[in-house]
Amino acid sequence: MRQKRAIAYFAGISATLIVVATIILRVYFRTVEEHEAMLVSAGLAFAVQLGAFALLRPSRTTGEATGELFIRWGLGAGLRLVVLVLYAPVARIFNVSLEAALVSLVTFFFLTMMAEPLLLEYDR
Image (cartoon, rainbow, N blue to C red; front, side):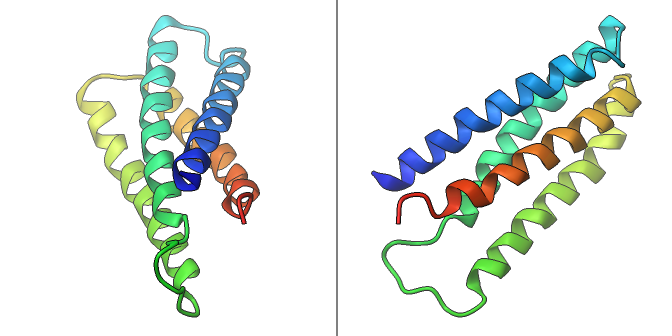
């Protein structure tokens, strides 16, 4: 139950951060194509961040080995990097505004990553 609640809180905070960042980024990215690219990036970032946070959450059934949290955090960071690297050619193939897509994805990843430590230990 606590695991689901922590992920739900993280999802709410992530969604809020992404919405606020989108509003702020719209000051710089003004065309319809750039707005569409930001929306695609927002959905992708939200899904990847929820997966990375679920991976990062400690297991309640087993004891945690020394360094296990760091390894899970590294896997999440690697996942974000792989998504970012693969997103660039896919965005180019689908003729999405590359600058808006990549800047917004990096911004969303960064902001939501800053929320992870706040919610990682809230239920202990």
